Amino acid sequence: YNAAISACEKVGQWQPALHLLNSMPGAKVAPNEITYSAAISACEKGGQWQLALDLLSLMPDAKVVPNEITYSAAISACNQGGHWQLALNLLSAMPRARAVPNEVTYSAAISAC
Image (tube, rainbow, N blue to C red; front, side, top):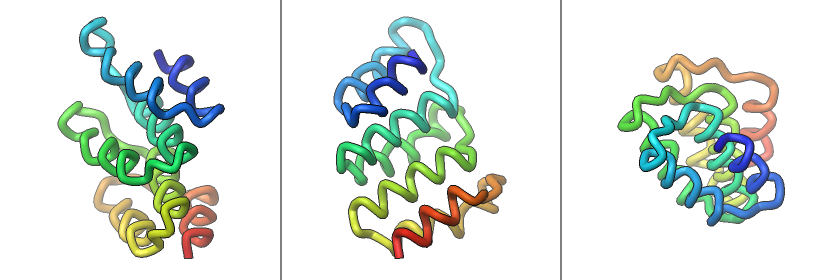
């Protein structure tokens, strides 16, 4: 599933990526942070910043902890949507989520501004 969702992400196919993500529980496969990061990136590349943020918000219910890659993807999605305030809010929320920003995260946040 992760490879298929990542392939969708590479070509900006957010709908098939979300379909795959949503079909995982029925196949008794648990998504992880890689799965969500790829799906969020697919939404970002498809211009679906709101869906990207929705996925990020669903992660705790799925018992998946977002990491710096997940946050970087969500921040990039905010950038694509022109929402720099949301991007900075996500950046500032990372320490509370025990996610450490890296160069990619800071670059995405700077680009959003």
